Length: 192
Image (tube, rainbow, N blue to C red):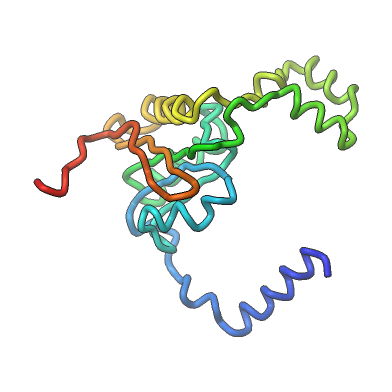
């Protein structure tokens, strides 16, 4: 059975047996937060559990490396919509250790694309159109660098309020431990 057939078969049963009912919520995040994180498979269930998030608590946006690569790209648009239309009041940018974007080699990505059928003509045409694939297909040297850059872009975005709390964190994809690397306000210790 193909993957799509497996999914469709499961989904039919899921709907017919009303398994969706435990996930019913609204489009507004209960904890009024947006989480920008990596698409890493290890974080699918681990990150929400490590943050005590449940279905409906947060808007969760994912891409490779939790990188805001353009201040007017689709990820920033999603953050802006979450803040102004969906009542989100805080943003958390959460990368992870052992990220595939660390030291990403654009030459390797381009070579792999070519080996899967993308022609030199396409690569050359994109270059002539002003698209710098080497720059576009780049990551970061350390996950902290990527998180700090993304936090900075969000905090300084001209269409977001200056008092919007934006935090940067890194999660360990094995243990779920979260390291706070940049907070919009001081932490209150449990003894206080």
